[in-house]
Image (cartoon, rainbow, N blue to C red):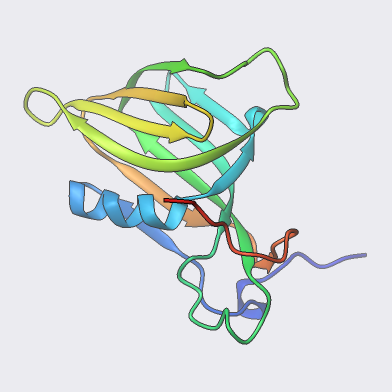
Length: 156
């Protein structure tokens, strides 16, 4: 019998962050940059007005990365108060598609409503119409060595 992974066994603590404003969302966006996920790990619970992604997130916050290999961790990104979901540049009919998250931003509307925009590598995007900004990022496994052994890199 195997034992579940525990955060106590990991290097560094688990993230559990919430964003109710643009400043908080910028932090979540930065920590989510370069997260990868299979298209099958996206779910919109229309009745609960919730959209969620199970991400394999690169641990940008890992201060000890110089002492060990770069790490990833599985995290759940949850957007609440979702009224509608639209996407472009994504082939949702292919269950083998792997997506890469670049940014999470908010486009304000009237009052506190607006759109959360998940920009993906390769010109894909997911646009969530929200009644109010409410985003959560939570680590759900212990960190593991990034399969590439390297940190993501972007040419500017």
